[in-house]
Image 1 (cartoon, rainbow, N blue to C red):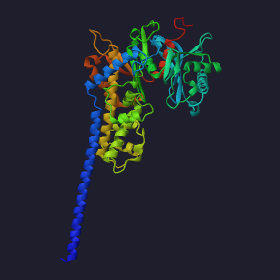
Image 2 (tube, one colour; image 1 turned 135 degrees about the vertical axis):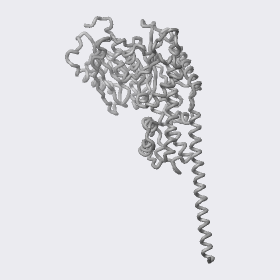
Image 3 (cartoon, rainbow, N blue to C red; image 1 turned 90 degrees about the vertical axis):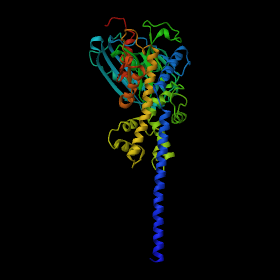
Length: 498
């Protein structure tokens, strides 16, 4: 063999060795990166741990904060707002009642015909109206005039035979899902706007007064008999269908809870005790916080960068607005520190809130053998293609960690409420059912979240007590609930039906 051939063979051998070394190096590097990604996931899982012992501490902390919030204004992170609702519907209500549900870029007007115990809801009609964007940042008069006109149009569609006697005003329940300082069952001043509204001259005004003036301007004779928020509406709707309902929880984009308290157990209540002896409390539980909450670095960063740092900590761990964003933040760290999606971080992954909870829920609940839905969501939302099955499994695991923590913390919150009202233990020989009405898209559509929350509540309370605790889906409680509260707080109660 000539010198040239020997040289060439040596070069080839060296090249093969180098290539092999590169492959080994790449494998080592990629297995190193994989180990790094796994380690990020495992650390996160540990931080999110919700063993029953911890959940019991969270439930106890919820009960303690409830007591503190009822004792004095500002005594707790929980506002424990007195709603002035002291008569929940019983099913005996009769007549025609209206509701207005304003809580976002659309509002709904509803008409409900109630037929008493025998006929219940005889007929229910509603119309949805979208609010033009310019009215969301205009003047108070312009917004409420627009709403009053829509109401008047809806009233004009009342069928014959349902017309009111001339001496009776139509009555309306007003669901207003913005922060309000309630001053009576039918008045409350707006504390601040949220959800894209910014109408300065309405802040500090009584929202019922603003609506009433707008109705008067167009000659609509209607009286607002109840001002409530969506959670109290859900409680009223639940109680109307089931007298054992003691609390309501909304788990949707945001989260809140309301429950029935004994009026004498509210030290900060200085008015006359209501005849019923009861008072509905709007907890505003999204603002709950406790040293026992399993908060990770991703939750802390999300909170710091949010519009309301330090506020709504519980909501940021359990509600639909935030679950997908927590998943995105963990994925970003895996992409950044473990090259999980290759050498560059996908551009779309850098965008806050791009991964919404419905996307997360679809990936988490993907039952296809090759996790096709996960692949599709990554491609459509984050523009990440060519993922391996191994990677997709990690993403499902990540969704599971975030959803499980949220569901188990929600259950601990409910257990805290049941403990406060003494429904967390069995009384001798008593088989009193306690029903909690639930509503909201997260609860309704995210099956794994719902089943995990329900099984955790059983785990927390024990099998025996759990037999008497029922979680009931109260669909659209907030709309019909406001009409029912208008009926149970009607100015004509006690007057014989004409």
